[in-house]
Structure formats: C-alpha cells, structure tokens
Image (cartoon, rainbow, N blue to C red; front, top):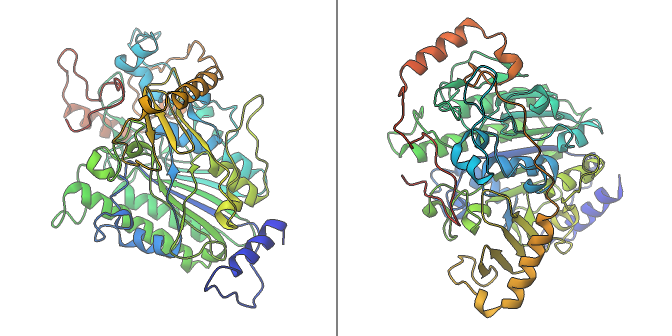
Length: 511
C-alpha cells in the first residue's frame, strides 16, 4: 500500500465510532465515478433543504458520504466542465465563453465581434472549443492505466474531432456534445445563429438511432459500462447528465403528482439510484470513489435558497452547489467538510490518488490543488482563493479570498453573510483595493483569444460533429427535417430563442 492509502486507513480508524475490520484493505488506486447534474439548484435536493420525496436516492447517498459544504463551480455549464477537465480556471482556456456564444450577436458584441459569413455565404458561428492541447484529467488517468469514459453532456466543443471527447482522453463516449437537448428527440432546439433543430446523440462519436428518455438512457449506458469493468483495471467514468437543464418538455413519469420540473428531478434521482445500485451489485463499490455534484446554480433564485442569485451570476446561488463524496474506508457516513473547494481541484485530487501526474499541458499553468489530505485525512483546507471571473469574461470579475468575495464593485463577507444581503465595500476599502488588484493581476494572465478563423460550415448541420455531418444516415435526415418543419420559420427583429448575454451582475431566466 502507498503512503496515502496507509495514512487514510489510519486516519479513518481514528474517527469516533469507526471500527476497522481485520480484512486486508483494498487496492490503493480506486475507481473514480464522477456524477454531474445540470442546473440543479442548491436547495432542490432533500439533503440541502428541498422536497425529500423528489430525491430519496441522492439523500441516501448524502447520508452514506461526506457533504462538501463550500464546494464551488463556475456559474454556467461550459466553464465548469472545462475547469473540471483541465484543473484550470475557465478564463485561462477562454471557456468562460461557450461555443454557442460565438453564434449569438449579443455575446459577440461583448468581444467587439459580429457574426461572420462562411464560404457558402451563410451567417455562421466561429469555432470555439477547449483546445486539444489542454491536458485533461481523462488523459492524466488514462496515462496511468485507467479506463476512461464519458456518458452524458460534453459542452466543450461540438464540431471538430480534436475538440470532441475521444480527442481529449476518453476511450468511450456516449451522449451529446452541445449545451442541451430535447430529452426525448435528442435534438438541440436552436443552433445559434440559425434557430433550427440539430441532432446531437452519439456513441463513440457516431450518431445513433435510439428511443427513450435521455436521463434513463444515460443511466442505462453507465450501468452497461460498469458491468463490463473488471478489478484488473481501474476506471474513471464521468457521467454529466443533461438533467435537469432545459428544455424540459415531456417527462415520462411522475407528472401526475409533480410539476414537469420536479418530475424531471425525480427521474434524475432514479437514474443516480440505479447507477449506485449497479455499482454495488457488480462488487465495485468498496473500491470506488464516487462524487456527485452539480455544474452551477439553478435558473430561479428560489431554487438556490438560502443563497442569492442564479445560474450565470457569481452570487453564491450561481456558484455554490451541493456536493457529496463517498469512498468506503476513507469517508465517514453523514460527515461534513467545511473548507473551500473548487471543481478545478478534482483534477489534482483524482490524479494524486490514482498515482498520476498533476500537470497541465505544455506552457500552461495548473490551478488545481490536491485536496486528498483534507478530504480523507482531516488536514486543514489548503484553498484560500477562488477565481470565478476576470476582465474579458461575459460576467463581472469576481474573486473570493478567505471570508470575502469581491463581485464587481460589491464586497461580501461570505462567512458572516452567506446570503450576500450586505455590501460591505465602504467598510473595507483596503480589502476592495487588494482584491481588485489581484483580479487585475489574474486578468493579465489571460492568453490572447486568437483570431478564431475557423467557421462552422454548413451553418445549419443535420448533426453535430463535422465528420459525422459529412455522411448523414437517411433516418437522421428524415427525423430532423420533420422536426424543423414544425418549428417557427422566422423570428421578429431583435428576438431570439436564446437568452441575451448578461448585463451587469444578473440575468433573468424567469421570462
């Protein structure tokens, strides 16, 4: 057993009420299962104050594991996913701008850009994605012998092969590439800047013809992959659900008792329960670290209580999310972890316990901090700073340092005022000055964006994935054509099917 495994067993044995059996400890390199929900509000699960009828499996998992009380992400989908994969803040990879933002005039205007025209004369989007030269956590774990799989939503590039999961360290891929799909038809509802359906459902980067509800299908695939695993090779399985992200249209069950949004959450809870049950049934649970968390805050403030704000804002309601970790023999059931942790820290933590290298791609700075000793050995939390946004982002520059968070010109003491009701900037000008200076230093580290010369052609593909769009099966064409015929064929001047870019510190998702 390596040093970390031995220390973890000793530390766990010293916890009050813990009894360690005489059997030999399992392998020191655990399997890693990362489950990520999408747009679930902080207070939606029962274990953080929501309706426990909707989340019995999540609540049971929380009771078995350790809740991370100050676990943070970025405030919107793609930045969080890129940060998780690279261990680097989103601004360093320009992932604070999503791929679809480069097809939306209101977002492009923030960069001083307009919609380009491709060689076919079509207004289209500039290709933007997580650079293939970035080193991902999947590559770090694959390099030390792990089987790597992504099952669900990617959202780090949807067009060029090198920007898709199998070009970024994953041996197996299932799910969709872009921001969100209809759960039943697997079509993205608008392809900015062209507001028409595109098909987005794939296995190993080929379009697949399936029927079912995406939440259930993601769980089905994960269970199938789990059953194929053996104790001879550890695995890293990343399961980023599209639940409970919109559009929430037809939900297959529970709508007789609950709203469609609550029914979708309960379906997600079903899926997590099935995956965890399969992990137990396969005999893999005892040597698997499972983390279950969310990518950003919910769309409405009431989903995130007691915190203020929503998705796409850097208030606590946009960036503080529920998170539970369970690693038998290393975490204590029903325990809580108070120190700050950001999703970038998963890279260094996972790589360390797997025996991999904690390093970024060539010439790139790693922001991830190894949290294994504080999570599993009771050491003090090493993180004192979290950078949410810097100048040049869609959202306002925001940083947390110790107890304080500077958000634009607002200053909050998060330790005393986690609901961010009291701006204390005038009381602490020295803190404002110090944090503003720190944000300026970090903004200077943002690399140039580059010219973005590559354009999506055609502007309206049948399916995401450039190579997949070159040979589209007839069943897919027929399905997409039929769906497009039922959509609005035009939009009033100035109107779009997607929300406009945030202006200032907030965004309104209620309309």
